[in-house]
Length: 513
Ligand code: NDP
Image 1 (cartoon, rainbow, N blue to C red):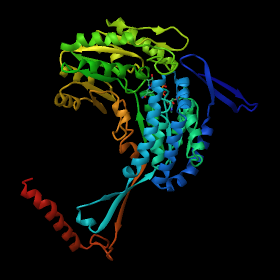
Image 2: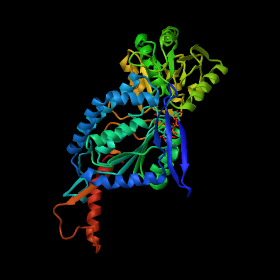
Image 3: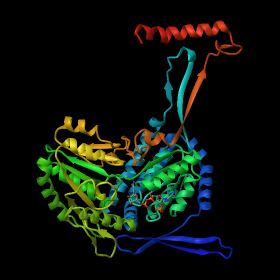
Image 4: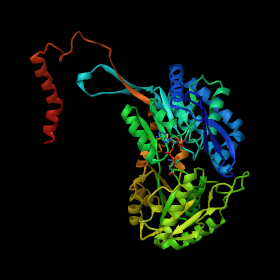
């Protein structure tokens, strides 16, 4: 990724653009505009114009547009896969996961949005609101700004736009400057599917473009690093607009002594290495109960040795793709170096692979502990530290010894024990005998605790966050004057006190409180 800017004679920026490279080859695969704050303001203003018409459509009509979108995604799947692979460097298989997510998300929100957003009748037991009919309704916020990262150019960007649109908002999406091409394909999709103009727009650019979107949108959906997430939340706080943050993770997996080791190894290997380990929900540390530690590590080592890494040239050509974000290479390298320097052993891999392209060898580390960076900070690469623990108690303590709390997993054949332990883990998503399933379960909220984020995607809360709640109270049988109204009538207030005493005081006295 390189930026080229030229200035007009009066100093204004003209045709500033960003070159997008293929991390697996180093070749430039496209150029996109570097949108200025003014460009963002204009896009948001157009979205604001378009939004009321979109909100006025019934949920069913909006779902119709989603159906067209879903068909477009399926018809153009190879074009989208090629775009994802070219700009991100991942394998074709990892790109297919994004297509599956996209079509499933369209189908899910088309079907469920109406239900999640339906008016809710409220009952109140208070005698002071007797006779009122009350309900809450969900009102779209207006223009939702979605800011996406580079690890999943479709899922974490357009994927978050779908429920926002389903709730009647317009969306302006700022994809990562490293992977903006697939987002632009989605904009093309909306045009070719006849979506109302400006309901979904993409502004391409770097951090400043994202910042400008935070400065203008009515809600910000951000996925990325905890550091930038904090800045986004602080700015949203200044403007008093809500935001939802899906940030980093240091996701842990516990292997209990009663686990099927075959399953444990398969879940660990896939959880750690799919998408090159560049997932917020990647398995980034493993704790194994002492009785099965040696057997588990021996099997995992064999599997790590079999994993291939390199440029994807079709299905089955490679297991692990490129490192998308250039600075990520040195982060991964530093984590391995730091671990080795503090006594860890590298069983497999451990080095940057020779070019062309950016690749890091799938790496298995043992003899690790919590003094090492690789056990505490997000690595976001194809490396995995495995630690022996005396028992499950120690594993739970170590899992919770983290500033992050996105996802944690337990592999066990004893469901009662596993569930009991799972509920003690400080993570927003917990899986038993799986890792990462929450991401594809659209009915299940997915979000992080602690420094892993605020709010959730998916589930009822994953669409309701894109709305404002309006509470409506209707007095269907209004009298001329209520008891408590001005001018004050002492006898009326004595009656009110008697009523309160009758309802709350006597009952409490009876219970001796
Ligand atoms: P960032 O959090 O900096 O970037 C995420 C998105 O925010 C990008 O679109 C970025 O634009 C944009 N952005 C950057 N600065 C601002 C700002 N001030 N206001 C608004 N938007 C902004 O992540 P990085 O790409 O720098 O990756 C750093 C680390 O984040 C990784 O090492 C990894 O640990 C973690 N990460 C976590 C992800 C997750 O899924 N939770 C995904 C990706 C990374 P641009 O990219 O154009 O600069």
